[in-house]
Length: 289
Image (tube, rainbow, N blue to C red):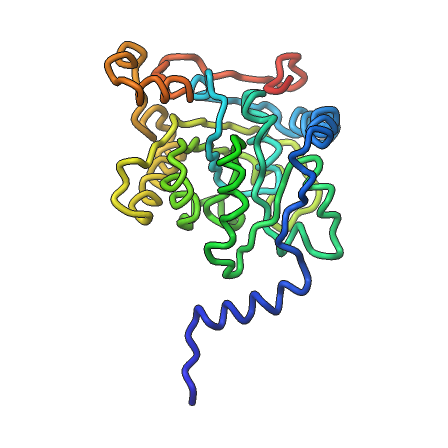
């Protein structure tokens, strides 16, 4: 009997599956007209649904995004298709308006799906989950090099239990290669709104924790960087803020030299003690413009 390597089997399986979906992004989705349409449609596509189903929505650690403009990598735990609307809603406008979302090609960009709709209104792009290799990262790396931020789910799939899964290495590889910070966002309650396998959302309480930027310039390797990111996310899952990365206090910015100034501009400043933002149902105060 001929032994078949697992990675070779996955490669063959992926090539067969690619006949049913596309992996190329839409060239027009970062153009100015698409950004205008996306901004106009935000209320109908994202904001009204977040307001209707996240009751209430509580946000902690938003001070970690103060002054942030990008490019940054944004990572979030994945338990529901409602994760993306909420993650985008908590971002400041300068970052949100230039953020692209990595979406599973085999689910959202099948030939029988309206992939263009996700590209237009979420600025989503297809990413290969079935053995795409380094080529999978070419487009998100090009986005980062052009000043765009990228939202990605390092677990690679939605959790069916609510527990945080292991991280893939793609985010760490990109962070190390581009030297951009990684913003971890952990959400609780979204699985109650729309768990895996359910098509219709239902209202539930949602709590979002935003961690301090994590820099991987001290990572010994890509797996080490992945371990740091997973540790930061697990810290947020346990309710710990301002321990995910190494926040730079305001008083130390000048002493840190050019790197300190660059981190300060990216928003990595220690502002611990700011109260959580609590948004009760029907509140006029919203986490979006």
